[in-house]
Every structure is written in structure tokens, then in C-alpha cells.
Image (cartoon, rainbow, N blue to C red; front, side, top):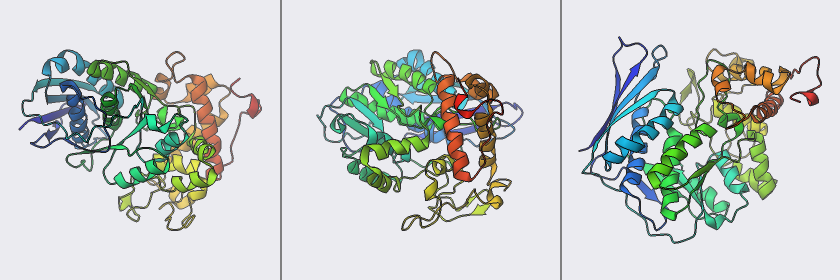
Length: 438
């Protein structure tokens, strides 16, 4: 039986290595539901899918160590085409994964003679020229719902665990064909990392694109999160939809599938509130609101405790990064019974007992630091200079996102944040707000 193994080195060499493994087994790594185009995947294309799933699984098994951050990931990976992955694909794979989790990746590729491909559904001969990643969350819903292209030429692609029916329901409500839904063998680790998930998601989208002969992938994510600006210097944001992630992923996909891919995020210049407004403009406020109420956001939705405090299973916490950003976008949904059956957030950050809590309020207080920078900086350049070094390093006037884009998104988000949480906004003393950034 083929097995992918992983050993992770931290900065403290005296500590034991962290290890994990993934057994490919005798069954396919992926189960597939929904349409797929007529083109078959090459051996290296099938390898990309299986590597994406296996790496996602092993990453979730590697526990974080606050005093021993991971610096090198060493993997032995069985593949169908070891020559390609050793000479071409491996370095490009390390290039994208290293950017996502800020570590060095090394690979030893071996032959995998017992590989089992996923079972193909009935061939869909429809013309498709765009793949849209569709999680069933707010941003992907708003992106798919506001896309003005003919929906028949777009195929939605989803990764699912327990939200398969929700994804299908939302896709149908927007007038799309059923999404192509992928489910991965095995279970996620409970205490591991979750920084490379978008690599897997984009790989699934690329495989579906290849089956249709399409080369455009769209990943919708609001600019507050897609620019990967941390709330404060001690936070480590994901880079899941950053333009540099997309550039590096395109290089890998072009090599694997012998084609010129593009990956776009039309929501990069928008706050999450503006994302919701785009859906309302496309569908009407009433229909948009009904669909938005169906979407799920919280990192800890099905956990009974957060920060040592109890909450109901299936209730959004209200304090994690996606919950804070979503509440800023949709302040009216915070209260319980804002609509029938809605439980509200478990912890209301407008209440001092939660915003001042040593654990529960950590993310909120970090956002206060970012909001203060956004609203008091004298110019775009000054705003960017005051951000954490990691954020500054990813802002580029040539390759983007630009200072103007990032500063604009952060200022508008800061205003929405203050409005949502009842905070008095401050502005530079010597310059009216409308002149800032000129």
C-alpha cells in the first residue's frame, strides 16, 4: 500500500520531529458527485489531485507549537509520474506551499504502481469556459450570484464534508447546474494546521477545468481577507486568496495541465459588506437576504467550546476572524431571532465581558489596532508603513495588491467596523477625512 509520509522540523532542533502520514489505500482518494467534462486527466493531473488531498490531511495532523514554529516540511510522496514531479512539478509545488505556510518544503517522489483513480461520472458535453470555486459561504455565494456571464457556461466546484446539500441548494437557487462536489478520504486532525487548504481547493477547480478544456478559475474572497493583512503583528493570516498565491498556483497548473491558466478574484477591491451589496444589486434585496441567511462562516461552528467558554453546537461563535468580518458586513444578523430559527452569535462582542475576555476577545482587540491605523494614517503610504511587516511585504505597485487598493479597502472596512461595534471613529487632526490618501 502506498503511503505519503511527512516530517516537520521546527526552529528548536532539540525537540522531536512532528510526523504524519496518509495511506492512499486500495480505494480512490476522492469521491466525486456532479458533472465533469469529457477530457480525461493525465497521470500528473491525477497526481496533483491525490497530492492535494494527502497533503491537506497530513497538515491537519501536525500540531502547532507556539515556541517551535515549523520551518521545514519533508515529504516522501508516491506518485504516478515521478519523473515529472521530481524534475518540474515538485519545485513548483514547494513554491506554492511554502508561500502559504511560510516554511520550506522538500519532496522525495517515488513510484506509485497501485494508484487508483476516482470514478468518473457520466460525461457532461456542455461548453464550459469558467470554473468558480463554490464553498457555500457568503463570498462565493455573492460572487456566483452577481456574475453577469451566462451561468450555463460556468461550472461551480465545491469541496464538501457536511455541507453538500447546502451547496447544491444555493447553486440551484442561483440558476446554476449542480456543482461538481469532491469529498476526501479520511478525517481531518483536530489540532493541526489549516494554511494550505486553498491549494487543495484550487487543484480541484483546475481538474474540473481541464476536463472541460477551460482555463479560467475564479475564487471569490473579500479584500479584507484576500489581501492577507493581519489584524495585528502577532497574528498569522492565511494567504488563501492572495494574488501571489494565485500567481504561484498558475505556474504549477500550467506545468501539470500544459495550458495557460488564469485565477481571478473580482472581490479583491471590496469589503465583505460591499460583497453582500453586490448580491443584493444582482438579485434584489429580498432574494439576496434569503440566500445569505443560509450561508455558513464560523471556524468553530460545530465546536462546543471556544476560548474555554461553552456554546451550542452549530451556533457561530461571533469571535473568530471570519465571524468578526461577517458581522461587520451584516450587523443586523447579530441578535438571536433576527429571523426565525437564527440563534445569533454565541458571544456578542458589543458586550464588555466578551470584548475584554483574555481569550474570547483577542481577535476583536487586534482588529481595534488595525482599525486605528486605517483611520488615523495621513496617507495611503503612511497607512501601509504602519502595518505589520508581513503585510507590507505583500503589497506591490506592479504585481499588486497596490497601496491604493489595500488602503482603500482597510479604510472602508474600518468605518464599517466602528459602525457595527459602536466605536467612535477617529481621523487625523489636521486633515479632513475626504482628503485622506490624496
